[in-house]
Image 1 (cartoon, helix red, strand yellow):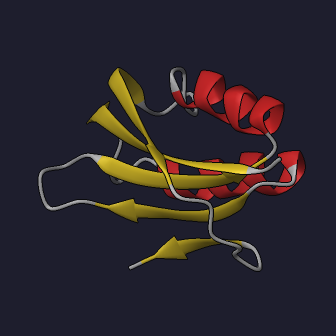
Image 2: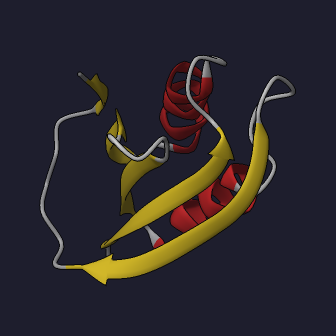
Length: 90
């Protein structure tokens, strides 16, 4: 049964290719949703897919790409919604 969750990633995560790298990871894992830069400097990631796929993405988010410095990842469950792919939102 697919799930969705939103992750709020804080630290040095904007201007370092974080959304693009997240999109590449999500697509490789078969996850749909989006990554979005928040006004407070964090990145919001909505991930929808099978539990094990979403868990793997969350583990990756805790590290991020080499250029990022992740300080915190907070996650909250969301109602499942079918997305066609994983997008970078602007």
